[in-house]
Length: 68
Image 1 (cartoon, rainbow, N blue to C red):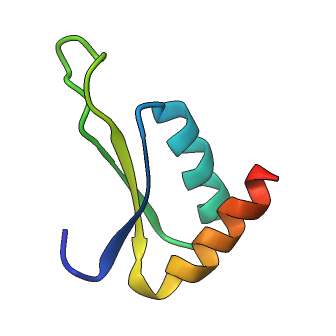
Image 2: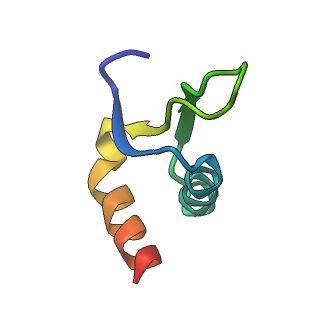
């Protein structure tokens, strides 16, 4: 992943990350999930949500509104 992508959210709950990712995509913001969970046990690790640097502020605003 190059420097143009910024991690805006990390969670051990992949489902939460997927919901936020879909909400961002519905608002025309490219979002990518990096899943670092251990594939053997699926208990350890986290998932991270990345957006393009130019969309960071708008993404954070949308996430905050979504969480209200």
